[in-house]
Length: 242
Image 1 (cartoon, helix red, strand yellow):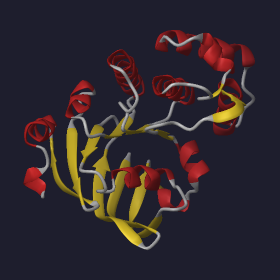
Image 2 (cartoon, rainbow, N blue to C red; image 1 turned 90 degrees about the vertical axis):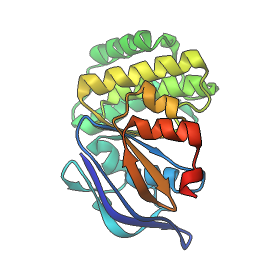
Image 3 (cartoon, one colour; image 1 turned 30 degrees about the horizontal axis):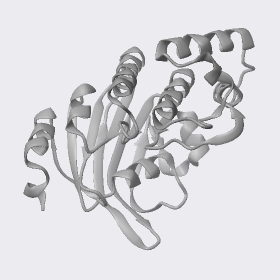
């Protein structure tokens, strides 16, 4: 699904990723952990194609496509979806308006409004969010937890193949974490989606039943293991990687 080989990335002449490698197959859930400043968010932003992140060398292949030849819009159309630490607010554009246009762009067809609205209401009910979210501006006036749930509304409507979760638990209380994690697990199982989660919290990796854990240092993966690696970090921290 996603294969990154020997990737080096710089921002403003500063090299952030250095010979980064990862191979995520369809249906797999991978987690990346590392101290602040090791390049975790750079991985997310490079995959989705933010212009400020300059790829110096290496390759990114997604679903047999050379991702580096696609712009940020084409990557979204290909099925890549990012949930940020703090999703942006877009005043004046409602969830319904954005999702209707995005689905039409992806499918090349006119959206059936009756089926579209029915599906939106079903997803709101499933996520336990008010149906009036449908007609609110994107993340407008929403708390951190509401924004994450709003992003899940977009996830279920857009049906991406590959999900990137950057500090998913940021701004969430315990009840919200359970709702968000359960929803992502349900989605991943239903669509056999691939997931990459960036986090500092080993407990979150356990909740998502992550199979592959990667430790990042100075922009490259220095160790890969299973959930036992996350448990080790929970007990010992990063002192063994200094």
